[in-house]
Image 1 (tube, rainbow, N blue to C red):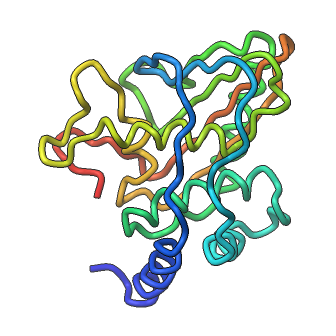
Image 2 (image 1 turned 120 degrees about the horizontal axis):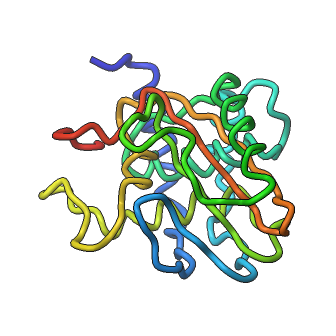
Length: 210
């Protein structure tokens, strides 16, 4: 049974969230089980800034600083979660450190690769690659891209649409996940690589995300 105080906080934030227009997801390239590859210049984030969600995220991100990249990652994750009435995530410096380590490994090639061998994930992990003009790709672009997979998830079937990917979305909204840590790096070729790690990890076979 969940504590009453966090549930009340979630309820208040969700009611506030419902007063802003829904996000219009930007177009995406074809995607595979690893993540998405996106080319070109991104459009500005379509989310209206939600001061209540921002304030809650800032409180759960001690030391992040106003609109630092870490807070931006957390803010967009919590917008997506609260739309499903899930409790907001807290920022994990430990997972941020791990994500920064992996992002540093990808600086030289910007390869869309996971940090764990296939099938051996100790943490949940979402990764993102953006092409030319990498300095313009922001944390919100990565989270919006992952969240856009929600249209391909069927709750009734607890599965993705045939031939589609939705595991990045289900990891973001996974009910048992409580914390996240992310990193962003501009690669040597001008692209950008972003990675987020989650604990406890989601996408457990046979379970629903929410």
